[in-house]
Image (cartoon, rainbow, N blue to C red; front, side):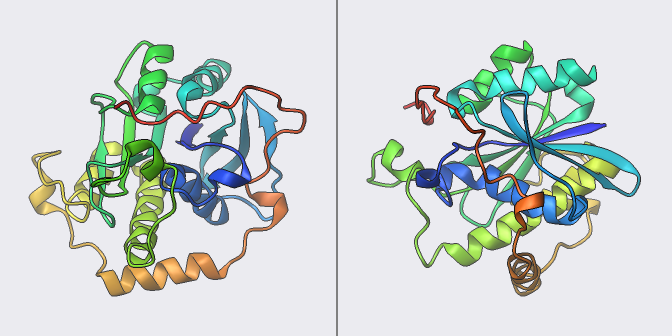
Length: 247
């Protein structure tokens, strides 16, 4: 069993915002690795659904704790399944330090000012876990809080769709192939050639045109209520804590 976590905030008001690209990526992954009859469950302070890719079981997880407390959900799931964060956890997360259209994979690293990653590190007691950062571009003159909780501009959307497609491909590769091979394959496309010594040997990634085609294919398959992770648990009265990047 492996766990793929997408970070974001629950609630209609946060859907399709920059801060929720982790959630969006999980939705795409659900359609790839989960049986259409699979049902999402409220568990580990999260919405979860189990899937399988090439014989490897995977738990897809969206924390319902709001961003700042994401570590509670992740730590609980890892403890239950007796899994090792270093080997069995991948976190999908937004990154203002990367341009739209780029992704970057790391086997470990700092939280980079992201409160969701900071809480995961605090609750796990380690930064040794894989993460896939999805570029949302820098806020420019906008306040960071307003920027990350805002939606993408029309001109950014094609790049975002391509990045989500690449991140979903990378997550599926990680499930069956592990992090080293996944970094070798995808970090060149994500604009990071320093992650491994073998990056120069990585195969050429899909063109923007091919990525757009794959993205369109993902988008053309509407998620069914039975196998998506869009509905927050009923009766959730926790205080809202959007969990922005640290200023």
